[in-house]
Length: 418
RNA sequence: GGAGGGUUCGCCUAGUGGCCGAUGGCGGCGGUCUUGAAAACCGCUGAGGCGCGAGAGCGUCUCCGUGGGUUCGAAUCCCACACCCUCCGCCA
Image (cartoon, rainbow, N blue to C red):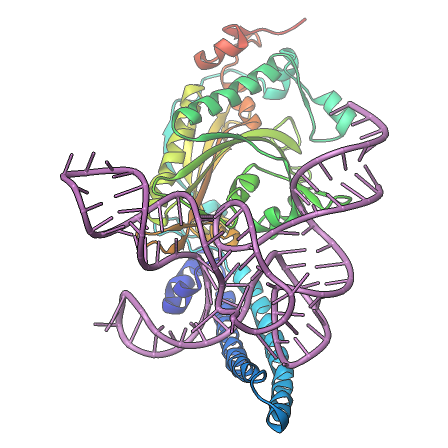
């Protein structure tokens, strides 16, 4: 949710942000109107309520006719107060609905336009020259690392087993992410993968993403699509000490329905219903958010570099940001079999948008509570196995293990199994 | 699945219809004293909305797990629900 004070004082900025996203500012007008309507309702209620309280206090000390008259008057007021209170409730519900419909203010500098208007900030590393590259499905099979056939047999399309070196690679990669993150001051966390509706709702995943989310009907619980959900909800309703940012690295399995993506990326493990991910999450003061955002991006780049993967950094255009991000940088790793870069990390600056909804605050220099800023970014995830296998493949189908992963694999090269 | 107990402004706690405008302690902050510190003593110490004010502020309303209800008036009475804890059973 955006800051209503900003909206009232500076609606022009909010409209400009909508324009950058290529979206209509009807929702801005609706929010302004709902805000005004609520304030009016509140004032009416408060006037009546104050009178009721004042008269009510006189009842015990009054007697006889005077008392009867007082009670009669307050009785009348009582029903008016009740009606006014109901009107306030109604106005608040309307305001909330209008509020939720307005996306976050786009950060200055973000490219305008839609999905195709992203800006490539840099390309790092050189895509390897591979004659007739095998894709990760073939390599996974050769190495005994990925079993898609049995994944489908047991769980259906878009499921897989990681086996042997595949399982070790994933564990090693995620462990590397955890260890490095911890070394840089991120607090390691292993989070719940099932959350209550409030947590899912509070992080905004029941809006546009609702059909993406698995829901357990019998228990009214949700499977998380990323540990961003439990991490963001972790401090719900709290007032934090943010003299330094609170940084977490959360490891969880992630579940996504991938509804509406039928036919897209159906091969292999690029787009699957379940995967594992280490996610970085930061709570900080709003003025630190940009700096923290760049720090998350830098961490992602260090991870990709450590795994010796060629990648590029993309500045996502305003229209492709999603509801809560003010700015988003993706890293895309080179995928030889596709001859193009594919998304492997995503770092979002949600400014105060997400924390306002979750009511996560800190105290400013004057000791007053203020809304915190939140950010998130990918430290490592199952999908990375794709560029990892493909970029390091050798003509005979073996795969070179990057230096940093050798300790957990116990060898330098993965070779095809009989 | 069954049976109990609990939920009060950081923590603990008092509070069974109007002097609750929520008690007291702990913790925290400030001060006195001290070379400094501790102790002692004094003071301050929840959140949100709205209005007024240039501003430090002032006024007002809301919030005692959540949602309803009773009442002129509810932390307090009634109903429903949520969450937490303990024990029993069952299962891993």
